[in-house]
Image (cartoon, rainbow, N blue to C red; front, side, top):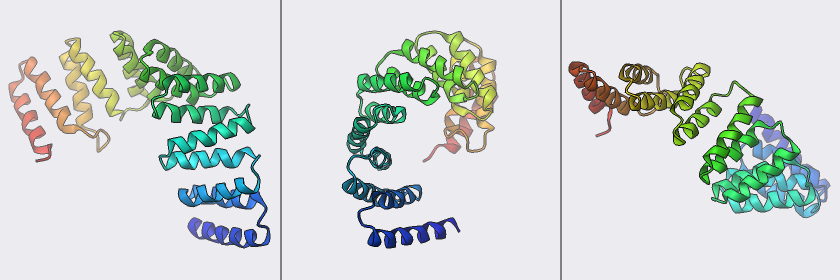
Length: 263
């Protein structure tokens, strides 16, 4: 039913462009419909038509940038986000979007700079702190990343990925207790968070807490297609069982891992 309505809308927009070929809003609306249907090449073309009709309107550039991002065209997206900023310099979202693309390209400093502007314009946007943390991590600034993740968590305490990312950063800096607390918080919020169990289990191994590690690997193994590498979880549990002297359990786990691993 939704697809039928969208098809009808696209037909109506086509008729409208014939009657009003110089109305940028028609092309823009058709492009939005196409983008919502993930027809990104068509959307990019129609955003382009809107821009040709009215070159000084920011939104077609912005949304064409988003469509280009979805097509993997980082350079095109950055160019359109930059034009949007030129036309609408107080639009915080566009700085955040350009920062994402800059991070993908490895331009960490530019990404952080754009996040700085976005946060100044909208200090309550949690996602921008996450994006700046990611850029700082990729640039090796783990302490700065933790500070941004602290801000993101303060803005929303119920997002497990934020705790997990902070846990990884804490572990990188050698703060095992902080990492353990963050992995545990992520699991408390999302009980099927396989990566958090795995990271916590690996840290428990480092700490020599083999029984706790076995419990976490067991939790991973019990998940239904939530955590992808169950064979490795069996291997990890087998190694931990060997350490505590459970040879029979270890052998069973190694056998199960061999069964699950692709030939």
